[in-house]
Length: 280
Length: 74
Image (cartoon, rainbow over all chains, first blue to last red):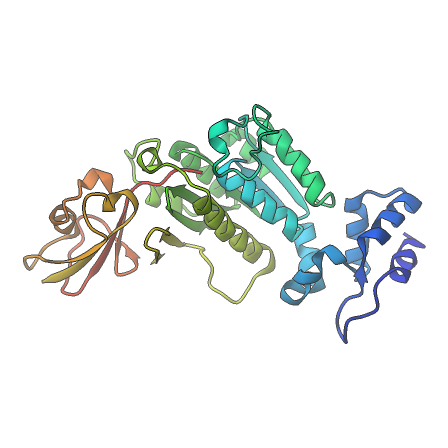
């Protein structure tokens, strides 16, 4: 857009050093939004396109570079669940600047969620998790195109919404849903970023498109619920597991030097603590 | 043969975190699970030296087994 790039460039901070992208302050984005009638998302796209880095991502710059931030902005991710795992996965996705996020959760907040679910507050009790998530997204990073559906993601809808997504992120509760959606992701040719927790323990892995890692993790005949029935659910295991998922999501979008958790599963028990990486 | 067995999450309750067990030659993974006092139905994932293993797999001296119950919370 003629004029917009000049407008933004004129308002960037002085260059930090050779090779560093010009930093665009939020105030300048807001000004441009008013002047040109553009949404935060459109402005972020224009800025990144012009080689300008919104200041909110300044601390990402050394890790991802402007090009990495652009790729994050272009990525679309689907998250199944907005509870213990999902609240944190969403938070990381928003802060990373993943451009489009579609999330599903049919539930409303209950008092028992308050010990661990990021979006659960006294104010949100009884409210739809999907609605609370939309509010959080608008607050944390309105440049993210966020949509929350107040329903379960069923296999049929997964088949419709997954193509073109970087990954389906597992933030589910229960084993049956995980197996069903892992199969749907596999069939849709999309990576399934898996995690699950029980008490202080949990696991995380990435099922590559077309693969069947989840069926090996949950052999046939297992009950619907795992040992979370006897151990409960506490605050930091979901955050830890969600961080692993966010890290793998970054790897799917940006590549990276490490091997990652594709086809490998990390099991953790923070009570010890012990970490076991299962190779194949 | 000596085999090291590590228990995770709820499998540790009332048992142990990590122990070495002496097993007869020719023992299989399932024998180690039983020796640890763990009902096989409670084990969802079995590691043998960082690789996924099945109850019927054979064991050798110095193997380390990790036993994980089904984990499905979120």
